[in-house]
Figure 1 (cartoon, rainbow, N blue to C red):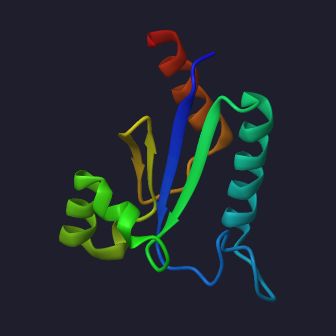
Figure 2: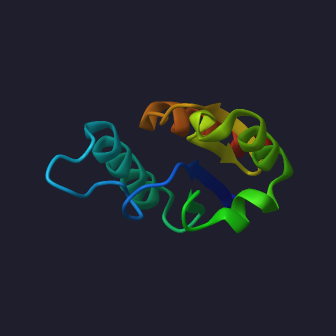
Length: 110
């Protein structure tokens, strides 16, 4: 299996995962579980990064298309997900099945 990179560009959150406070967002809880599951299954062959607009703006600027989309649309365009540098989703957190399907296709095409 080849090494792959999954980056989730997210809006400003109170912490790195967004799962904090008295009533954390259920969607973020499920998404965190998706990332844990992928990390386990890909056993070091998948680099996962979560970039927060509040804390990691330099990562947004390093990807010209991401920077352009955020500049043109504001933070409402987030989250944006990339696999190996290619945008695969905008304005939603992807499910485990959606991400796995894309990663498997990338592995076949590598």
